[in-house]
Amino acid sequence: MRFAGALTRFAIVVLPLLSWALVARGGTGLGAAILAAALVASLPALAVAQIDVVAPDDLDTLSIYLSSAVLIALLGTLSLALGLNELGGTAMGLSGLDTGPLFLWTGVVTLAGITVLVAARLLSGVTGWRETELVRLVMPSTAAERRGFVLVSVIAGIGEELTYRAFLLGVLIAAFDAPWTAAALTSIAFALLHAYQGPVGIVRTGVIGFLFAAVVLSTGSVWPAVLGHVIINLVAGLGLGEWLLEGED
Figure 1 (cartoon, rainbow, N blue to C red):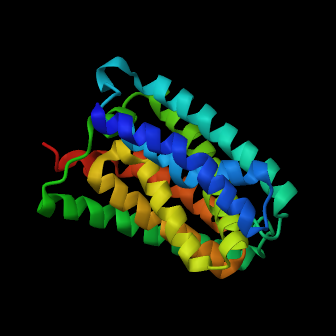
Figure 2 (figure 1 turned 180 degrees about the vertical axis):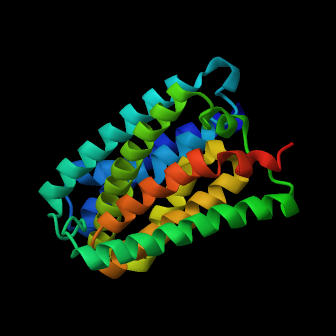
């Protein structure tokens, strides 16, 4: 609890400081700076802080899907609105790609992401890392849960990419003009936001997040990352779910 309290205080203190730094660097207004500071530092810190606070026994799968979908949709909508106002669609990677490149890059990032899932599963057997109870809880097992998982996977794919790879990546590039450093920072923040998945989940999510950012930087478009994110979520939950947890028993 003491560690959680320290992280909570950090999340509160760092928000105005980092917001001021982003505004001082130029390229973004106060509203976008506050949201970016929350995304890159405060929210990840709070996500780590809540690991030992949230009890899986007090939660149910469909409630987790609903709360996650609402939060991600709100963040995605806010990121889109502030990003369009402060950065513009091109800087956020909202420009479309031709059908061929879109399918090609979607396939590349999807295959790479699924490879990371498989590698993390194999690595967990060597390191002794185990999936958390929360990860087990969010894996769908009933027809209703599978329908809910499909919905939250689509919302997460769109909302998280608009938030982290379109908005936050764009803000950090505008402020510091260091695209690959920005990609690394957004990926670390994205990984820590998924701290409920434990060590293996943090590493897995961070690497996949960096792959998404790399595709956005390489193509200038966020849409291959959006589609790849949705597909990877669906494959992880509906296709590989049982196998990913198999090594836990």
